[in-house]
Length: 122
Image (cartoon, rainbow, N blue to C red):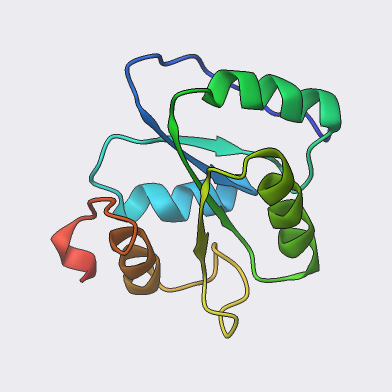
């Protein structure tokens, strides 16, 4: 159950942001203004779950925002192989984790990918 990715079907949303955990998702949701679906991998993802995810993400704009640590780097490499068209967003290595990075930093990272954020965080 640990490696399970939960996908809520929302065909109307064209953009998807993939993060590692629930705390990452909460951090991003706090600054996000755009309507974008956020999917948590819970740190790792099996090949079968990745295949399901790839099928679901077909024809969507996909962004990857994972931690700047060993597990995040491993996950990012997996997504680069399996979803080469995804855009990779990076948290400054000084913060290491999405969840612990300041909201202003997360907002800047998202804005750099043309994802609208609340002006309070700029």
